[in-house]
Picture 1 (tube, rainbow, N blue to C red):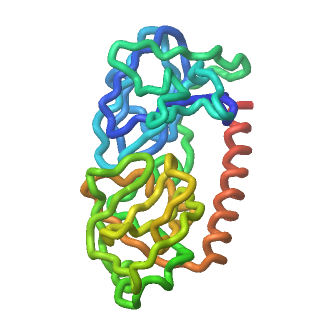
Picture 2: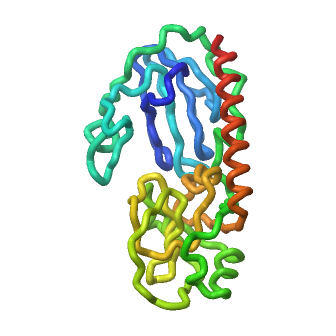
Picture 3: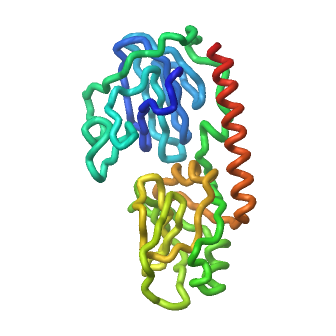
Length: 278
């Protein structure tokens, strides 16, 4: 849509959003399997569309997956806070007064880029499907062993890698709580709090693992049995209550290779986008 990579967009959780545009804009979205429409026309993920003044854009409930993201030419006009235009709902700052959108509210948009060629109503060109629609019906998240892997007995290690876990309703952008077989430590000793990051899987005293996501804390005191690799975090972000998920171990070397491959693909994709716009 012509924005720089730091421009603000909208994150939509589970659907149910309707927008009406007051001027001409270019839009594109990606994420879960959502039914998105401009009037009576379907707008698939990863495609660019031209909207006119008065046009409506509707996001119906997701068929599967949890979240999607909408980019609008010009971006959303919100201030930069701590280097980001995003919203922290727990701390109530950033974005639009640190809160979610309200029905009937107005979303301020910045000026549109002036160098874009006029697009077709809905483009035929799109990004790779696995990038624009990362949600999976039967997700398997790849992981490397966490620093506390050896604190769990052999039966628990095996249970973690062969069992299916279910996403608890008590999950959010901070972390996904998982229901399933109990993961037991060899010894219930206290641990010193250490750094955690998105992808860390902690096991609290209940034995029910917690997969940390984008809004997670920076330190944690629960044992860290595993860490989901970076390239699979987009899949993890699409988990919603009731979904089943499994885990598959990979080596640290494989995790690095997969990340480097994705970054190379992303660089090529950026070149392709720039050629489409030229």
